[in-house]
Length: 165
Image (cartoon, rainbow, N blue to C red; front, side, top):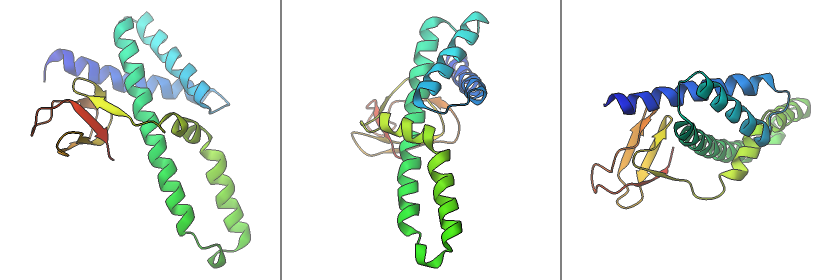
């Protein structure tokens, strides 16, 4: 992997960590708060000379895309879990507590999931967090166990992927 690729991947990880730090400082956990935390992280890293403005634009777009897709995955998993819970098998107090915790702890994820309602497409050269990507042309599957740059499809050499996990 080239030094330029590794620099962008490392910057993506630092950008995500700084966004988390700024988000943790906020009382609210909304999509607006998340957006603000990303902007603070960008500014912080730009001022420190870690990344350029164009790099920060790309990193913000990559992180937002990955969080939106992850939020959609959480939403889908929550709906599956809720459908499989049989309230007749649970005491009402416990069920109410689980419902309350699930609803209130997912405010940010719900907000981000709304952004992800549109199909998210990843392109060759973009950075992604850990994910499973499927080529939109031939259905070849790429597994990212850690952050990395999206290569062309090894099977058909096309450049558009859908996150599938």
